[in-house]
Length: 257
Ligand SMILES: [Zn+2]
Image (cartoon, rainbow, N blue to C red; front, top):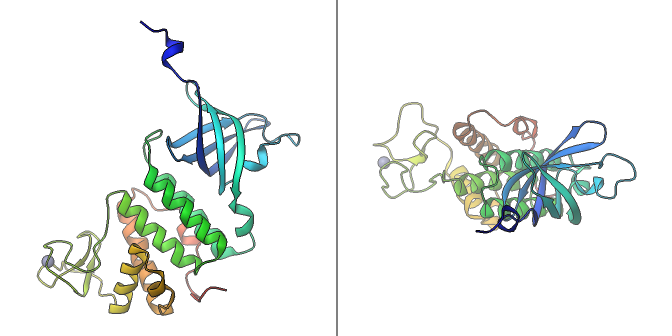
């Protein structure tokens, strides 16, 4: 029989995005991470709020890091951090990009409910979404909406934007019913369904499948309508709404600056 020490691996290394950082005591911080291989992890980073700390600045929200953690009884401890990309800095000067990114971090935390359970697709979606946001590749609100749809799909709630979500009859159909799972045909349409424009439905499909050529040329009216439906779809699947989503300014939707 092997001893407990031989069985356990107390130190592990992973790639992570910092979702949240909270103060703890005088000089410590608790960080919530989404890691590539260990899913969502909460860990304590000791002494990082002292001015002499070399790793404190690498553990801010949005940071993409290579991190070493020591397994603890309740919380793991951060022992080493190397920066891969400090994405927060590039977002601070753009309010819409910043609030969109913050909503992405909160969504990533909410859609990985089980701590320590690997969530590789969620990690990959978050990193590529934040990179696109930092690089200013598209309107930040489109990047956010695409991320929300795709992370919901990865969580098992893929909406239908073409065939009827209830009976599967081939689209296009006009009605959109969140409890039914998306677009529904006239026979399945429940009372109170939304009736988005055909352009909006096309945009929703493009955002889900990542067809950016299509999404980038969409009209402001369709973007606003799509954002409203995506927000409602997300709220439906989460027990409580996102705190950060209402902060994203969706009133004046334009192209890439
Ligand atoms: Zn149907």
